Length: 514
Image (cartoon, rainbow, N blue to C red):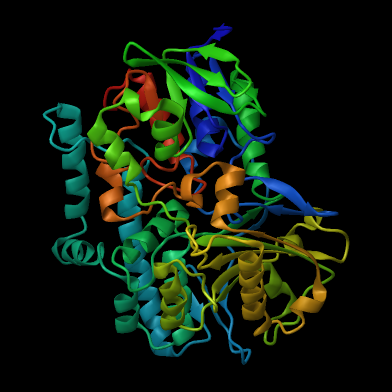
């Protein structure tokens, strides 16, 4: 061993940075090792064409927890805050919503949307109370765990009898049925359906999609923001806080394995053969990569490795980046509307039809799209007068039948361009350069198994008390000295920092419930 630390964090994604910072602020000596040359994981800004830069993974900020910002004294400048969502119509009669307000629909839907948003926000606020603390263990006699369970139950009861019943009825339902019951406008239903399934291997008719919609709202009530400099500026602020707290950050240092001696984690070894010693190892990698690759199945109990290996984490979202010589023409949009969030989802059935091929390992020939033009708000991302388009395109299954060959990639890129061209007919003529990241590319660039942004589906059997798996929901692995702090743990993915903060609190408490 060359050096010894109080804690070693593997992976400088945003949760790893948060966890490392809080450990260091508590007086621990902390080493943070990152495989890539840039910290931030999937929350980075990088060039993809000459003069053009983009948020390579996550491209909107809507879940960063206030507790994280306060404790780390983060100062993140926003290019835009509280963006509206515009669901595009081919005839120019678009639907727009923001907060509890919607326009472009009949009065019945206006009233229903206000009621829907109020109810969903209330339920999302309930979930958020559980996000910023470790989940209690199930089946335990520990008093703190039992008290935490009782508090959560009390929070549910505080909804009142009627709302509590409605919450319990809805939480496992699909979003399609709820939207069909409440709204008439197809574009509104299409946009809300897409909100519920972005980044998942789910369609609007899949169970749990109301829960995934609530999860999206729970971060910051769905309030969307664009940081100046892209999402990389958020990671840069976190890295600045970490270094200020005394964390040693080393990039271009991929970890080959977590060293295990006599049944406990004792250090790490890098790909270059360097070794670092610590009795506290914290992995920001996904649970499967951590246990099956970095630790090795032979060091943990067989049933546990079986559960870890069976976490559902099939990525289904691709990222498309376009360098444009100017803004495209979209009928019915004003120039300032290009600074908002734009969705391509004709109706809830369109989103479901886009999902259907993915069930059988095929990409969608008519994908649904979330797109932004971040350079409209932030001129630093593109040359003067030119623009960047950043889009999430679904569905693009990780395990594509026949694999992501050059032909398959080009076919899906063309399908995405064709979908956009239905609303922006001159888009193809404006393209200077493009980049498509399939889930396989996301896995390779950001070291996420399956290319799944959340490190595992957000479904009831992989949520709260059983995330990532039963018996390992409090960030501790069944190997002394080993912890997880990434999106595969409670509460889940998104640039929130909650998992990193919760993990740090558990570690600082000596692994006891907090």
